[in-house]
Length: 78
Image (tube, rainbow, N blue to C red):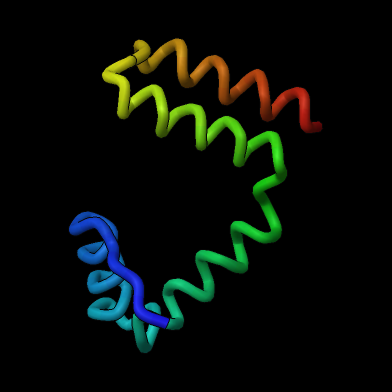
């Protein structure tokens, strides 16, 4: 499988390898996917998809509002 990453993600992958935390790009991506499988539920995926749509449409929100929303969701999960 070949994948294309945005430059900032590619840079992050390379940083993880250069620091010795991971041996290869595959190792970085496998760790990331494993974490996603453990931590992200369907509600989170829907929120991420909506955020991507909002950004594409030029909609932005104040950081404080976004942070408060995440904190509320974390409280609700507990």
